[in-house]
Length: 322
Length: 166
Image (cartoon, rainbow over all chains, first blue to last red; front, side, top):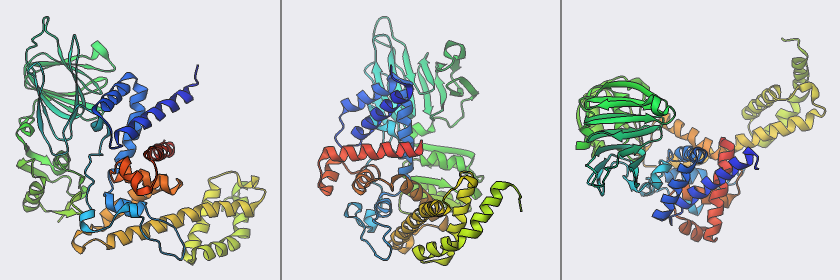
């Protein structure tokens, strides 16, 4: 019998092996599916995976060409200058941009349906149900004999269920990191925020069973209701906000929304970093803004609020006081 | 001034050793001001470390602590130099605010601290793959090694970083 410490090391080595494979440039869909399965098999696997995700998140904050030039430098060499390593590439304006791939969150790499940052996509499932994937969202579709299962790895979706053609009809289930939703009706929103999930019911009803409380913690939400839940259960239940689903039309609607929250919502649709400086965080924003053109939204903000948009390359933007 | 034994020992150490330590560091760093800072940091490090009364051989011990701090200091100085050069290479209009520059510098220092003790090729392969999004095949060509070597490098670097970060 292995000592626990040794077993943990093995899990970490395996997680590293998966991470290396999925970012090799030669990973297949089968690889991605196998990694998803490995992660799901044991919470210890998922924990190891998340440690790696946390690490790569730090890397993702650095503009690649600049990072390569600085981190890939030779030295320190007292009294001697050394050239930037060839692997880093030049520092021309064209080179200072984001690498083509989406390296922000690890689970994004492994899902069957993925949207890039800023992309929205409608996915039709084999029973006629439809998933609308919001920006930077990843889902797996795991149809089983007794369940129509969708696994939300991250991001936000709108679900429209169709009646199952099978007899007896199978329940439609959305699985998240903090719990499982069963559709009791037709249309609802699920937003995975990591430690919590926000559910909004547009039509019909949804039952949510938290991962750690089981049946005791189960709650049911009706049309017009919204809830924020964690792995233990309900955190807050509110009426569904008026503008909760405008993202499905490609619009961000704000009604005296604090700028910090507005920028956080907008940032999801934008490659790289978008931040709001503390001194302007409490300013209020109102209006309807097109999510497809975040630069235009930022320009509009600078017109109506005492802010300026500070840019360091296209991919590192901060909203500061004017 | 505190009269407890540990502080007394530390004070004695300081009085007896700061002179040669400062001169030694000034020679290595080429800067009086930095040398003074590092002398201070060395004794702070000793203060928070083992009981000063247990130090049998003060000179080698202080030298080791000071040397470690000096290496870190030089590495950070070198990173800041490379960073400044990189910023200077940018077109005037795209240079970020001092605040953003400072935030990004700290991120770079954090990453650099994780990677610096890795062999150069391991570090380069890791950065090219994870920071710059290059494929293993591309990196293998540039570095002149096999693809399986690239895999090993990236895995080794990842494992190493995880150990440091915890």
